[in-house]
Length: 120
Image (cartoon, rainbow, N blue to C red; front, side):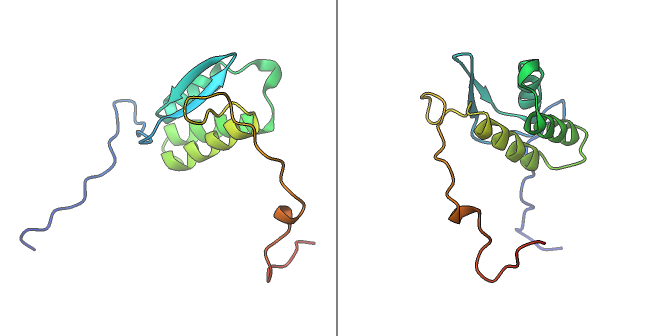
């Protein structure tokens, strides 16, 4: 047994099994800005998402949050999927300002990197 070595502390988990993301993710819906700090917060937000706007990206985010809550995927992976949802739906808030407007991707950015094969 080594003397003086301590195990690194694990991630902090609250009573419902969700991990803090560190920095809150800010999203805006109908002019109201909310901070998403946990996967449970993200799942709650998704439950309130307008039914007429629920599509493939919404379902992916909700499934990821549900899987993280059930400990089937990592909390960080679920937050990444939720962040993607927020970007695609243009509800992600940068620095407390209005929702982000993403620049359209160029054709070049959609091409595979040099040396990779294009799927057939």
